[in-house]
Amino acid sequence: MNWKSKKIVVTGGAGFLGRYVVRELKEKGCSNIFVPRSKEFDLREKEAIISLFKLTKPEIVIHLAAKVGGIGANLKRPGEFFYDNLIMGVQLMEQARLFKVKKFVAIGTVCAYPKYTPVPFKEEDLWAGYPEETNAPYGLAKKMLLVQSQAYRRQYGFNSIFLLLVNLYGPGDKFDPKSSHVIPALIKKCFEAKAKNKDKIVCWGDGSPTREFLYVEDAAEAIVLAAEKYNRSEPVNIGSGFEISIKDLVNSITRYTGFKGKILWDKRKPKGQPRRRLDTTRAKKEFGFVAKTDFKQGLKRTIEWYKKKPELSFLQKQESKTKN
Image (cartoon, rainbow, N blue to C red; front, side, top):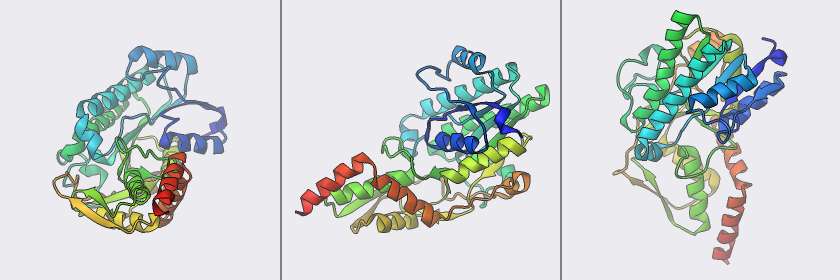
């Protein structure tokens, strides 16, 4: 693909993953990239999408925009997570078809898999049961893009692809406890505990579930590779192939952040899906993607990035005052 000549719209291009995808595209030589902002283009509204496509006339749409969050956010706002994600994706793909967009890249989620999927998760297991309850509305909303993608290819010959991503992490992640995923939430919790001289932190569940995490730079590389080389509607897993228990994750983060207090587990809180790890064979076979970043190194980079944030500088000053 000659990226230099392509007109590309990247929804969510100003977000955590989006900034890395835009950077990857620029490194490929692409200069005609448009990132719609929600203040100007509310992608839940049909007319906003029509205005966007009339303005930009894209050849490729990479749809990254989504309402995302951890277990707590999904439990509090399941209706929003279902509606916003569903309506954005469905209307974007329909208007992309009508505007004769040449390729549509839809991003799905590991949350779409059934709660008790055999490990490693294979793409053909996607419909073998109902997703884990705490994030089922979000997972199902995203999975409907796969249904739409396959239906549109059959009826209209529309070139859309569907990628299933695991949880991401890395510099630039969201550290807001109301919406962040487990890694940034734990990093923030440890540094705040240190600053306030607390001798313990409380974590949800019992630490037994396992998760797979993908460094954000690797995820961006996978998305751009798929946009360049993959042209079928069969879903493709995008992950690292690395599985770690929440207990071991907490222990790693406390060690790297320097928190030396106790770890308490609140077993009254939900712990989510028992295990998660993807089979990434298809991604390697179809477009040559293999994650490169070692989890330990990626985690350390994320923590080092967070140390430089202004909010942490304030906390560190508070910590110094407390010690003195």
